[in-house]
Length: 301
Image (cartoon, rainbow, N blue to C red; front, side, top):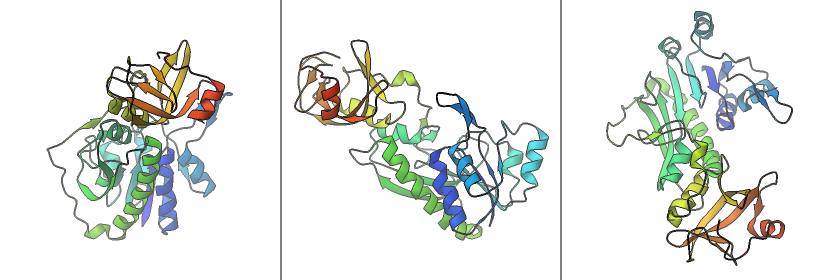
C-alpha cells in the first residue's frame, strides 16, 4: 500500500521499519520538528526523523496543520492510508479524511482504558494486570475512534515503563502489518462507553516519592516512572533517582533506610531498591551505588 507515516519518538521507529520491511511504499514521513538537545543545545531530529533519513525517505516536519498549504501538501501525497504512532500533533478532520482508507493509530493500551498521552506509565502505576495495543481508526476525539484490531499482554511484576514500552512497540508493529494485509475486509468496532480512563501526561511533580504510601504504591511509582522522569527522593540535599524496585519486608518509620539488601520503609513493609542514580552519575545497581554513596542504616530519606 501507499502509506504516509506520522510519528516522532523511539516507540514509533519499529513500526516504520516494519512497514518498509513488509514492502509498503512510504509516500512521506511526518515527524515533529528538530528540538535543541544535549549540552550544546544543537537542534536534533526526532528518532523517527533520523531513521527515515537513514532510509532515504522524504521527511516533513510542520509545526501544525492549521494552514491550508500544509493540509494540501498532505492530501496531494495521494496515500491510501496514514499510519500515526505517537506523532504528537493534532490532526484536523481534513487531514484525517485525506487518505482513501483514513488514518490508523497504534495506541499502547486496551482502549477505552488509558486514552491519552501516557498509557504505559499509567497502566503500571495503577497496577493493571494486563495491557496491550490497539489499531484504531482515527477520528476527531481523543483516542475515541473504532478499533480494528487489538492484542493483549500481561504486565510483569518487575516491568518498568522502559521494558513495557519496547514490548508494546514491537507488538504494535506486528499487529499493524497484519491489519494492513486485509484492511479493506476489516470491520472497525466502536469502543465501549464503559471503562473509559484517561492517561494524563506525566507531570514531574508526581515523581517525588512519598514514603508514607504503601510499598505497593511506591514500587508501582518507581517502575512506572522509569526511566523518565524517574521517581526520586532526597538524602540531605542530594537527589537520588530510582529506576527499578520490588516490594520487600521491613518495618520502622516511613523513609527509613534498611540494608542487606537496600530497602526503604513505607507505610506497610518496604521497597527494595535495585537500580539507582545520583545526579550527574550513571545508573548503578544497589551494591555499586552503595560503594560510591554509602547510605547508613536508619537514615531517614
